[in-house]
Length: 167
Image 1 (cartoon, rainbow, N blue to C red):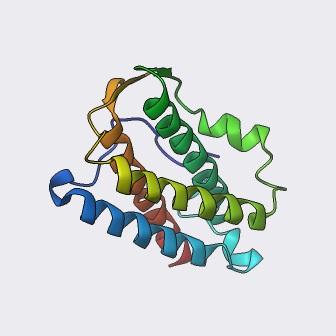
Image 2 (cartoon, helix red, strand yellow):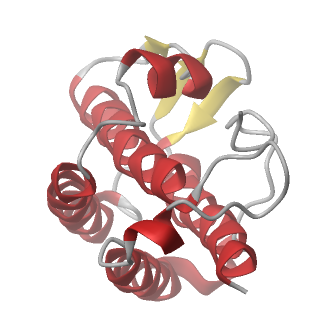
């Protein structure tokens, strides 16, 4: 099973015209909506948005793990000169980290803490350090600002899948 298209820089992003205020609102909104889904029943966590696609539970684990990858990138971009960072193989993570048996409570705690850290760093660095560059192993040169925008867009993409799965 898979979540859909690989998570790369080629995905649609939130418009950056709203600036920092819009970004923080989206990060908080998607965080709050995502956190509510961690309390779903086992039956709802097992639902999928299409045949052969990830369950809601898998998507929640993926969001938690993706947030850790995004935060690591943010840390590296802020701390190292123009780092080269590798793409995340989401299907390998799902298998290797055994999403089928991983308690959603663990992923919930990680997701919430890491998202709050990302919101903090966005508030401090989106405008001040947003032009810092890094190199993505698939998409090439990106900026810190683009990565912050991607966090919210990525979460919204998966929330739309969850909404479909839950009907």
